[in-house]
Image 1 (cartoon, one colour):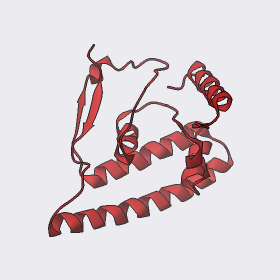
Image 2 (cartoon, rainbow, N blue to C red):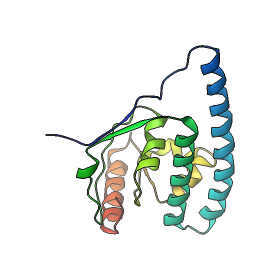
Image 3 (spheres, one colour):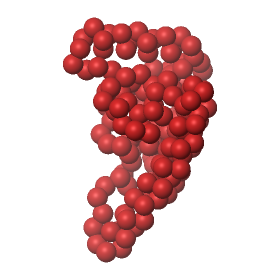
Image 4 (cartoon, rainbow, N blue to C red):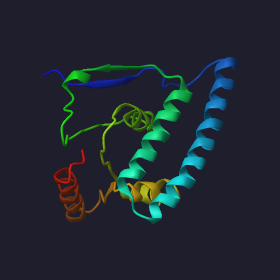
Length: 159
């Protein structure tokens, strides 16, 4: 079978003085953007506007991807279903994958993520406010409940 894939070839460690400076600027920009958008996300989280929160996350991902200067090569984009709901499975390798998902997919989707991420200030609050689903990986019955919640999201038109 031929699967769609996203390659982020430029997400690697830098070497040399120029790359070190570029990396420092990128990190400063990422932290600044994350804090600024995070404050907006906290306000939106108070009203539980999931779709708006997700749009804010997309803004964050696209801004970080643009700032990084990374080049994306997308294979099989023509096979991505553009209808109501799509099940997207990803075995992501780094934070870059998450950023690029936001940058590339222009539709409402929900993550399933390990529950410990939801306890991180600002980040976790934004995830909960966007309707993302925590998974308690050490507890089978609670993990199963997370799958049922994900199925309900798909029935509501979320991918």
